[in-house]
Each structure stands twice: as structure tokens, then as C-alpha cells.
Amino acid sequence: MYTSTRAAASALLLAAVSLLAPPRAAAQAAPAGEIAEHVRALATVSAAIDAMGGRSELQRITAIERRMVGARSDPGQAGELGVPDRTPVAQVSARTAGPARSAEYLDLRVRGGLRLELRTVTDGRDAFTLIYPNRTVNQIPGARAQPILQSALRRHPESLLTAVANRPFSTRWVARRPCGGQISDVVSYADADGAFMYLCFDPATHLLSSVARVGDDPVRGDVMVEARYLDYRQFGAVRLPTRYVDVLGSDTVSDMRVEIRLNDQVPDTLFTRPAGFADAPPAPAQPTLQPLGGGAYAVLGGYNSAFVVLDSFVVVLEAPLSSGSSDAVLGFIRQAAPGKPVRYVVATHFHYDHLGGIRPFVAEGATILTTPTAASVIRRLVRQPHLLRPDALSRAPREPVIEEVTRARTLGQGEQRVEIEPLGRMPHVDEILVVYVPQAKLLFEGDLFDAYAVDQLPGTDDSVRLVEWIAAHRLAVDHLLPVHGVMSDLAGLRRSVDRRSETAQR
Image 1: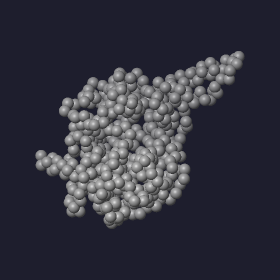
Image 2: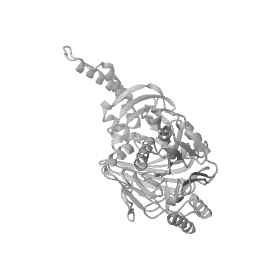
Image 3: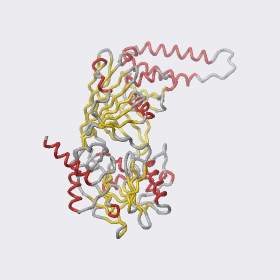
Image 4: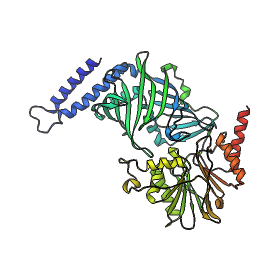
């Protein structure tokens, strides 16, 4: 099949050149070499489609379900720095054609006892996420439905390569070079939504071996984000990969084995909303500022943070996600405390999603108060290049000022103070800080208790330890602000721990 495809591509190239350069053309034709790069790319993609069984066979896949079991080994989420876990994870990825729908199910047991069980469904117009442990539904804004569908379709070779073949002018030959850990035929491709990828093909088998794109990781800097496809096997008339490995920079973040069902074996219930699930309140489209009294403010969004205005300076509690998120927090601070500098930022622990917004505060000259393990990550992340999406620290580099907190630390004095407490080794992570603001009766924590708006989930081992710690210190807590979830209180934390006990007795 590849020979016939290559011959057809050569004929197409000759026809294209003759059309673009007629004997008496007055206008300058496109260089034949540039057209040849598109034609060679299409020939490479066509060879891959043939190797998978041919375009007609791939188009006969009206529904496909992948059950994926493996491990997550992201070092940015480990219990100890430099000792990646192999956290068991199960996924189901399903899609149908005509009209296109996708369903992505995830079942992940997080260290410390938290279970994340979710399913996101979209048809490109509507999208929702089911949260199984508390039986709620999060409706996703319609504008995000199509991007979620596009991302799901290009995750898998059969739908990605079909889309590439349908967009010939968005495809170009790059080179034969290393890609995905082996020498590959590399083709570039721009998807309909603008996502730009490098498709890597095995020169011997012609099969798609990996898909890579350039990414801006808040902690790792400019990196290649890569999905590798291994162990192709026959499923009827088509060949599909049965192992997926996800790589971020130099880190392998997941390794999954795949079982596949085709067409009438795929249940329609994967794409429907089950009965008995309550609607969760919609998440705010943008971060919001909530005053808590006593100079304390909560910044609520996908990830939460906070800041406390003291007499002459501001203390920020957590800098999660990205530089863009922290830029929004800085805007709120200038609004609430004009002229007061951010002197300190408390980073609770080393997990990368909790450190992704540190860079703008380093650029501001703030001192970072954190654990020894998080300090080592911060010293690395401030030096990582962000050439494609430069932030304030990229434009004016400086060394971070870091103070490692290994025992209780107080900022401010009297009623206007911030108390930082190291909890030591916890089930979720080996070093972590919590923050108490007496004047607001605010306890701020990350990953020890995740609060939910509807029907609180059972607490984790960390939640039990947190209740014990609060009782031992006799803290008055009116506001309990987690990094994940909604504002809660001490009663909400205790309710989650009680539910954990009830669940264990069943």
C-alpha cells in the first residue's frame, strides 16, 4: 500500500508543479520544493493510515472505547521530592462519530486516601463533568465544549490521522530525526483550533509512534509535551496502539495499558448523564475577591489563594497554577492595599501545581517562606526559560529570596499577625505548612482537606490529622480556605471526617 501511496504522491507533485508553472505564466508560482514538503507529509500520513488498515476501515469505526489501566508517576505530585510514586490510575476514553461525542473517565486514588472519580462528556456544543463520590454534575460553559472535543479526538491515532488527511494544507514535512526516543519521520500539523503538533512516524512500520507539542510549563519552563503510542495490535481490520506513555520534558508522567472495544460493543450510557446527580453551582469564569475581615482576603477560583494586609506590607498565601494566576492576585492586592508591597509569600508544599505562580512574586522581590523540599524546586523553577510566553521574571531575572520554615513562624504582631505552622510528614506529602490568621479566624491549607459545594466528600487521612492538630492548638476557625474547592469552616471539615468513619464501617 505504501508503494501505491508514494506513487500517487509523486503524480500529485508533478501535476501541482505543472499547474503552478505553465509555460507563459505571468505570476510567480510557488516554489516546487515547498509544495513537495506538503506532498511528502501527506504521503507519510497516508502510509500511516494504510499501516493502520486503510482510511475506509478507520472510517468504519463509528464508536470506540479504550479502557486504560496503569500508573501516574509525575514527580511533581510525589510524596517525597525525587522519589516518584507509581499511583494506580484507571481511565476510560470513548468516542462516537456522526455526530462526534467524547467521554473521558478518570479514577485516581490520591495519596492520603482521596479518591478522584470523574467523567467529562461533550458533543462539541454541550459539556459536563460528573463527580462520582458526591454524585454531582458540573456544567461546563458552552464555549469550552468544542475545544474539549477537539482535544479528545486528537488524543488517539485513528481520529487524529483522519483529521490530518482532511486538512492537507495544514501539514508539512519536517525531517527524519530523533522523536519519541527513536529516529522518526516527523511531520508538522496545525489542527482546526490552532493547536500545533509534531507527528512522529516509525520509518520501518510507518505507524504513528508519538505526538509532541511545545508547551510552557509553569515549573519546568519551555518543554516538549509528548504522547507515545506503543505495542500496536490488530483489532479486526485495523491496528491500534495498546500502550500510551505521556512524557513532559524529561519526566514520564503516566504509563497506561489499553483494552479496546469497537462499534456496537461501546455502551451509549458512557455519554449520558445518570439519574440522581445534583447540579453543582457553576464555577466563576474569573477569580473573585472575598474580604474575610481582619485584613484577610480570599481569592477564589479554580485554585484558591489568599492574602493578608498587615500594617506596612502584604503576605500572600499560596501561589498556585501559573504566572497569569498570580498576576491576577497582584491586581487584587493593588486594589485592596494600594502602595503596600508584597513582602512574603507562603508556599505550603512542593507539588508543582501549588508552585506554578511563584515567579511573579520573585520578580516583585517578595521573600518566599516554604518547606526545604519546596525551596529546592523554587530555586530550579526560577531559572527555567520561558521564551515562548515570557513573564515578569523572564523580562527582569533575579535570584529568589527563600526562607525555609522548619518551626512555627509569626509575621506581624498583636492582633495583626499571620502564624505559619509546619505539620511535618503527612500522608499526602512529607513536608507541608498551614497558615492561621487569628484576626480573621482563618485557617488556610492545601491538599489536606478539599471542600465541595454539594454533599461533602469523605475526608482523607490528612483531614483526620488536621482536625486533631486544630483541636490540640485550640484554634477558633470560622473560615477554612482550601486551595481546592470552596470556602468551608470547621464544621465542614469535621463532617467530612465523620463521613469517612461512616464509610469505613459499611
